[in-house]
Length: 91
Image (cartoon, rainbow, N blue to C red; front, side, top):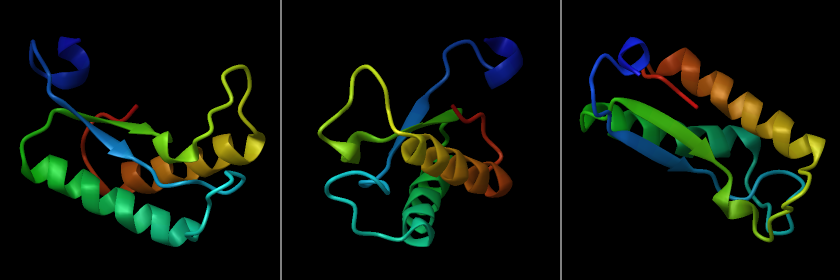
């Protein structure tokens, strides 16, 4: 853990994504989703968090056995954009 976070007890902020493409309540463009996620991540960075975890809580209802490829692609896209802008471990 020390190799990743440079501390013994890291604080990890959760970036809650709004509904993604393919989700029943999807409304925002990927650009808008990325802007919201980046704003949240920057707030965590300024607040002293040691890492960020990205999750798709807005995609209710959840698919427990298999998520669609559009969900994987959207989350990968957002994670890549965050990693380009925020210097924190991201999962």
